[in-house]
Length: 186
Image: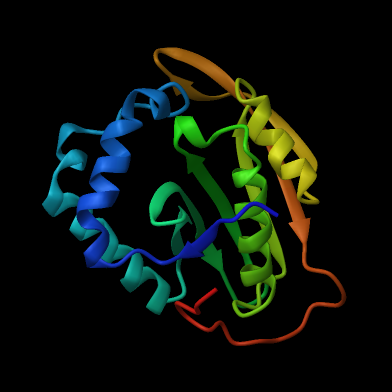
């Protein structure tokens, strides 16, 4: 498995995280709509880190940096945590352009699945991938996700409608009742 780690961001990461976002801005905007200019400011990055921490404490979402050595090479998160009957969340991730094709996305998804189905006690992960991004779909399929549907013209990117693939994976074994370890370390 590639030598990467996942860890929650801290306020010590503001400068490096901002540099990561700025360096990959054009690349990311090929896949998602442009973020407002205010997103690319140190105060906004600090606020987003604090919001991620608060969301983890409240068991609403969990965000992690994908780190290789000392460098941030991506971000991965679980959002829309839904408890108690579903114990599911939505998985999302993005890698720096130079980090693509090295197996780091697959490794990061595998690590996050361990955390999600382990310490966080989730039963199901869902992911939604634009049909213009088959490489991301392949990462999820390699990690045990299976398609459960698609939707046509479900989001607008750069003024054009795009379809989505919807994928999910279940925790192994029978569902277990486990309290989430909010902000649990990997």
